[in-house]
Image (cartoon, rainbow, N blue to C red; front, side):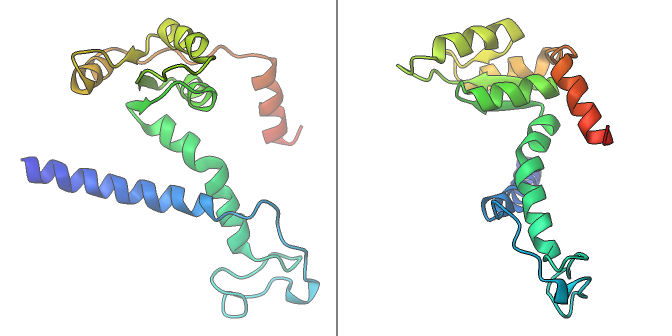
Length: 162
């Protein structure tokens, strides 16, 4: 039984790495168009070919992994073990994912983030350890997602193309 769990954990870690690692290599900007390579086939521009402007499709794939990798992983998790931070709190709030966190020490903004995390019902690792905190996180219902707002409405319009 324990070997089975280790195998599943290893498979999950491999999938997460295969999804997140390409984001570290994503180009910040797409390369300049090369119209002579427009709609190039994969054999002409490995591994995926090119768009109509001659940009490698690999660049789009890498940028996509950079943009959606972490939010998708957070949304798919039952709980995230982390330290208090703006990015993870925002992602967890949007996806209604429980956070389990460690004390961040003397970071000046930690008390404000921890207050927000307490209000969401997230769990701080206490003296009884991480295993106890994770058991609580998995037994409690997930926190509610953040309420719809003008920002979310604007994001939906942008995604639909106005």
